[in-house]
Length: 230
Image (cartoon, rainbow, N blue to C red):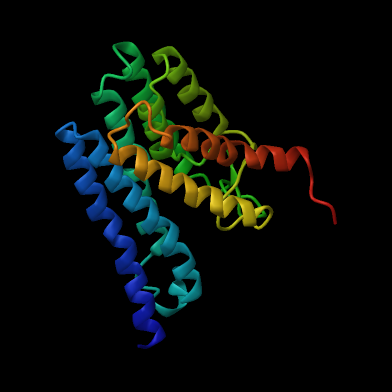
């Protein structure tokens, strides 16, 4: 198979995320939250694989007629932002005005963040929280903290999107990647497990989600506090 065809198939693989987002949305419309999150986990796996493939087969050079970055952003907004925000509101985890506040903050702040050309740092991390609301909302579904605490977490994370606080990319951030990548893979495993058991409160997956989520959330900030030695 030629490099051009391989590059094309990478684009087509990325586009499967749109189908997965529709399947997740249909599950959400039926309030089948566990199924919705399972589809979103599959979409997250696709998103984690297509980037390395795109760089390996140089899709910008070998199939430039498709804009892989734009395609990725469209699907990311659906799977990372829009569907999780809908689920958070529709589920009733945030009642009344708190639900409205959450979905407005999530969708509006994320739309602005996605078009910010400064979102990436020099070490391929993110400047500000990278709008991974699919991960945040899944953890909130699993743990079901007080709704005021949920709203506080959402507003705080949205606020960091417009700061220079560093958040790692578990694949592209080289520093600590030997730990970050296994943590990210473990998060995916715990997320799938939690959704599979319908977020049963006694599932050990919840503890795994807490540990891995805290690492992924705070590793970049700790890296800033502890600069790498030359």
